[in-house]
Image (cartoon, helix red, strand yellow):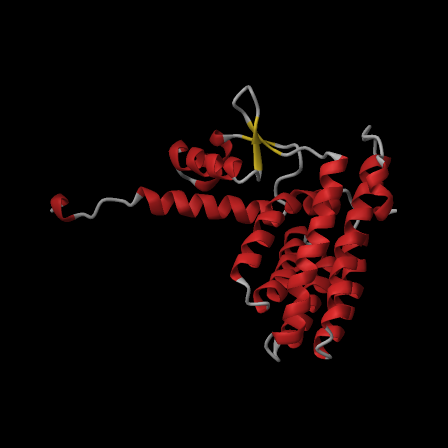
Length: 237
């Protein structure tokens, strides 16, 4: 009988939509400056507008998305000073997590990272953009989770919501060069982790972030961006 049917838990649906949008941001499926519409997302996810609207509001509150005066929602557009600040913060905080993971993480961590790095290399060779971005994320978060610092992991996760759109734009600009460089840097990080050398692992992680940021910054501006280069960018030269 219809009376025996359990009501749908709208909170569960909202959470699923929210998590899918977070994952999409992590993986660079949205580009910096891209408009995010409730209608398109609802159609893609096969859901109504309400859970999408709630999820977008949460992401705006977390500063992963930006709500304009027109009420439309966008991914934050590229702004040079904000991008540079984000890069510096990531180098410091993610480097801290890497140092701890190298010193105190499980003995299996290096082998896990080796396997992910090999998957990423195969994805680059095959030209599968989404697989490259997903493997890169898994590599980084395998390290951060191994640090076993939940509050630090939460901070890093929120930083990646703002980083993902840049990573996606970098790959879709038609070059896998920065990710191919990342394979080599990842190998150095793995070697340092095998030796339990937190300092070298942290330096390698910071280099990985810096190299990608520098490549993106140079190519973004070379392709017609008009942002001036302030003095704060000297560390990315």
